[in-house]
Image (cartoon, rainbow, N blue to C red; front, side):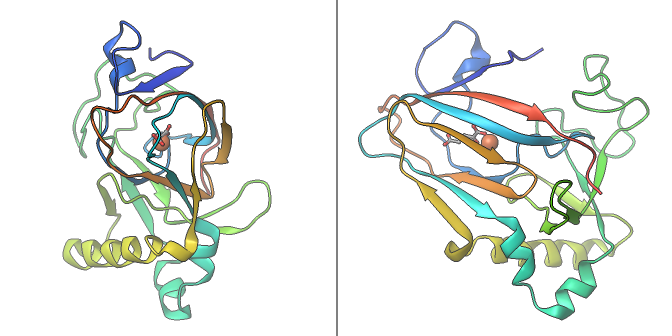
Length: 209
Ligand SMILES: O=C(O)CCC(=O)C(=O)O
Ligand SMILES: [Fe+2]
């Protein structure tokens, strides 16, 4: 079981190797735990130690990204489901999950790879959300694989537009909370010699619809 409070660090801060993830590498736009049956509804991130020159973290507004799609694309994607592959287990369709991937955390019993609607509805305000990440493998269910890959790539280019992003410049002691149901977040690579330490708590959400 990962700790409830996860330390994200590129320095040897605490003993466990889980605390050294994800180092200084670029984190492409992602939604925390989007591959779970019940993905995260929100996360909190606390800045313990922050290097002078950044990096900043960016949050993409996936409600606005959905609203600014053209009508033809909205229609095209209205009822699509996408499979979200877990980047840690790398399980694909037909693979058998190991016993450690139990109910609730990773996969529900009998489920191997989770499918979620590409356009999900916010459980609190009913807004439509383009529920897509740019970091991990996805696949559209019952869709021509080449056409599907092209469509995903086009949508990923769309969510990358700076106009959808909030950019946060960190100061030590900052505590940020974000809605993982309606945003994706991105962090660029940074200098490996700089020490950057944050602590994160991720809250479990509900099954997207
Ligand atoms: O390092 C960052 O700024 C973001 C890390 C991240 O993706 C997370 O805490 O969920
Ligand atoms: Fe994250």
